[in-house]
Image (cartoon, rainbow, N blue to C red; front, side):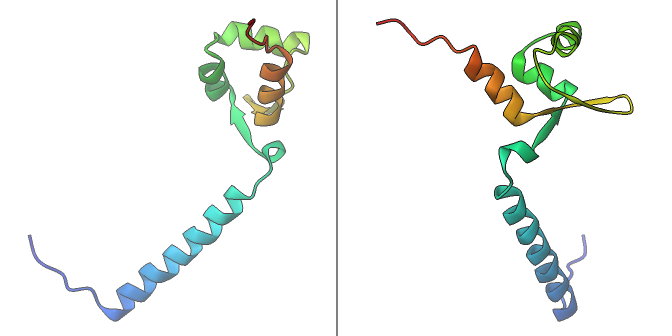
Length: 92
């Protein structure tokens, strides 16, 4: 395998890409939970439920969702609210 010595141009390109990634990551960290979504597959994994039960919950209004074409999305805040609303504290 040949050895490549990085050039100054390559180094600057890598630095630029790292700066761009840093900006993107900082923006993501500052996002409010209301702005974050997961798709139906992720929702089913988080809740450990079947596709049919997810459909039933949507149809009954148990969980809010957004549909774009054939893709279903859930606001992470709605999932958190669903869990909080159904939380039963432990008994002493």
